[in-house]
Image 1 (tube, rainbow, N blue to C red):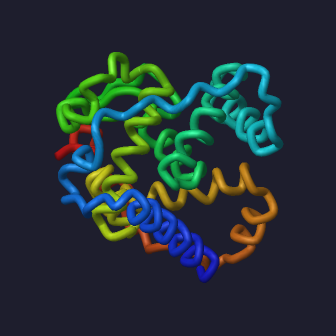
Image 2: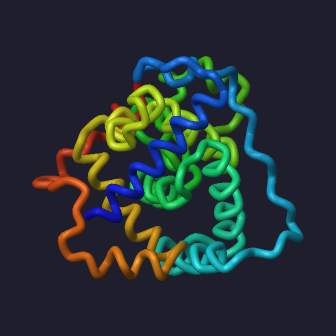
Length: 222
C-alpha cells in the first residue's frame, strides 16, 4: 500500500511541477481544455528508432492479450511514451485507460460521440479539438485524451483519482483504472511490478461494485 501511495504522490508532484513551470492557472474540472489552445499532435516517432525493452514487452503484451497487430502495437507504444512524457503521466496510466475505454480499438465509438482509443467526446471539448481532423487516428486521440486527463488532474490539485473520476464519471471508474495500472506497470517494469504483486494488502481504495462505472456517455464530458 505504501508503494502505491508513494507512486501517487510522485505523479501528483510531477503534474503540479509541470503546471507551475508553465504558470498555468488552476482549471475548473469541467473545462480542462481552457488550459491551452488546440493540442499539437505528439511528435511522430522515428521509424528507425530501436525499441527499448519496455516497448518490446508492451508490444508483445498488446498483441497477445488484445489482438493488436504487432506493427500497430509498436507504433502505439512510441505514441504513448512521447505523449505521457509530454503531460507528465505514467505510461501505465495511459495504457490502463485505453484498455478500459476501447480495448485498443482505434475506431471504437461510444455514446455521445465518444471516439477512439481513449473515447474522447468531441462535443465536450470543442475548443481543444477544433484543429483535430480525425480522432480515430491514434496519435491525435492519445494526445487529446492525455491532455484532457492532465487538465482534470491539475484542476483537482494533483489528485489523480479525482482527475480520473472527472474523466470517467465515477469513483468506481477511477478505482478500476488504478487496478488496471498495476497490470501495465508489471509489463513495463517487471521488477517493480513483482514487488507490488507480493504486497497482498495493496489496494488503492476498496471497490465493492465495479459495475457502477459510468457509461461512455458521461466519460470526459462537461
